[in-house]
Amino acid sequence: MFKRILIPIDGSKASKKIIKAACEIGEKFQSKLIILTVIPEVSIFEQYPSNFPYSMEVSKANQERAEFILEDVEKSLKDYPYGLETLYTTGSASQEIEEVALEKEVDLIVMGNRGLGAFSRTLLGSVSSKVLNQSKVSVLVVKSKED
Image (cartoon, rainbow, N blue to C red; front, top):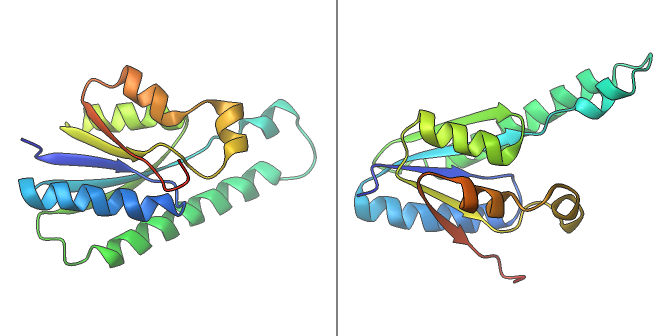
């Protein structure tokens, strides 16, 4: 039923709970797990040009953080028997999640309802709400303890 499961994570504490839930489903259905993290675009610096190369530094730091998050997941899931793929993209989280889900032909998206902070949620809107409303595949939202 679920041959491929997409698991978008952001490195928050809730990410481990999301991965655990997806692994349980994946083991029952012998599913390949696809772990995704999305790097936000650094477009604010392009709107306000300056002599300082902030956008390059921020982009590099974001890329290094994404690689660190994914390496950590690869280590923790090294014994997962049904296949594991990790990747990161840059852009709007909800749009990137939807695009990867279609490109990888996933059957299920397992994601959290809360990410790195309430401020960014208020500013950008809830990624999980957008994915739930726009996704063409089933979405399981794993709630964090704070809810």
